[in-house]
Length: 400
Length: 232
Image (cartoon, rainbow over all chains, first blue to last red; front, side):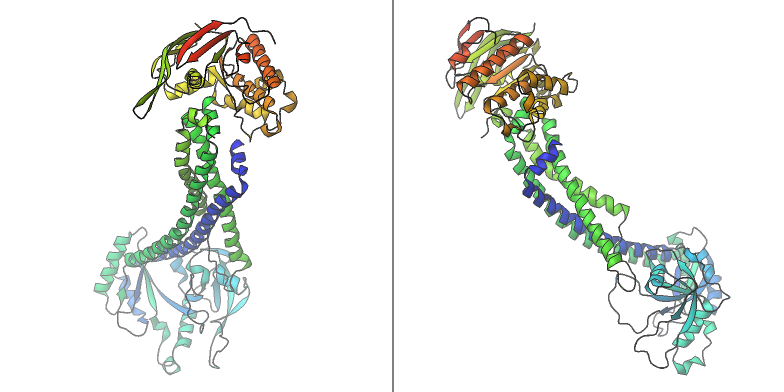
């Protein structure tokens, strides 16, 4: 109680000091939430690409196409458990390519069985996944479903017709059979269709002069290869190496290269955002040091009195440490609160049209933001508290 | 034996190459329940003696026994604990905490006595005994000088110490208030058998103690019984 009174004794000074911490934690919370959101995306990539081998055309090949027969060749390679074709198309073609913190809306044609092998499992908030024998079915990721306000039973035209579409632009009506649970990563912006419908879209995407001469059922854009359950990343790398040496006309990417690429990208982003926020917070911490030194200077007689009536060095030190820690905690809680307010406002009230979220508040971020501010307050209080505790009571009592 | 015993108690300070003999080999015995006034000119060693008795200072040499405990060998922590349990302080400038009310100020020393029997009831009782029951929730800024010193006296007694040390307690109040404070001290001395050591410049106040110790240049110039404290 007395500590709270000490903090409120100089209201303006305490307000300014706590504001320093608030701004720092606010920055840490928002920047951290940005980094957490980005990391969730990265984690999805790590999970998916860490459990599969992506096979594409060899270096130098212009078209991103492979013969379907390569799947059988790959399946014969030692260590390969399953291999699936796949196609991807822009869900909103014609849009300008801009820097984004998310993955653009994408039509993804996959074999429904692939979900049994992938480490990145998709589950359904409503409805079900597409089946291989169906036609015109789509399962929407949570973000894309929100963006187009679609539920199970609704229909959606895919790819979405651009405003300036040419007369020969072709799209198809798909019935929404499922909406996925939010994953915070790639599937959220994906519209899943089956392979047959993917091949239909592939045909549509080919130049008119080639459409009649290419059998789209015999080509795939890429192949996802899976090892036996529990195959380690290094073993998957070896399988990739074997595919490259045994199967001609393809290039298998080593999963570890992709995973490391994702991780280093995420680490750099986290480091930049967190360091900027921590810098702001440390500056706030310096104001706590200053405030506590002023508090000690003002309360010299009080410290002398407390020692005279029996306070030990530790008693005095802990009183000032608790006060500094409390300043950090109050600043941390307020800064975190304001940070969450901004993040939630951006993600809901001011959400972009595509429904994507830019920030992600996680329990780890909450603990880190409030905990760091509290610890910072305590650390900032150490020197002033030490000075207070070491004051000579005889001199302190007669201080003017 | 309960009481205070100073044997060749010495406190020297160094100021450059010069040695200041603030207290120079003082030997005294103060029995439990005595009311002692320490007088002397400025620089005679009164305050140094008080600070040594209150364990705020460490002596350069000699021995100081409080209630049969040799205090000169105690660690800083043990000295703080002894101070909390056995010694009460009253200062000229009251030294009340402005953020605390009367009751909270009186209870302040209880924070540092873990096994102290004195609780809120003891504090309230002392506030009643010093005549401030109607000011219990008041802040120091709402009190007169005399009232503040009464709070300080109640605070000094809250842990039921055996020794109360007062440094010019009447120095900041008028004569009438000063006499009321001395009457209060005499009453507490008589009722609680607490030892009182009062440093003062005021010879009228000193004359009301049971014993007067006169210091000069850090030595005891005179030590005389002046009679039983007059009941208040």
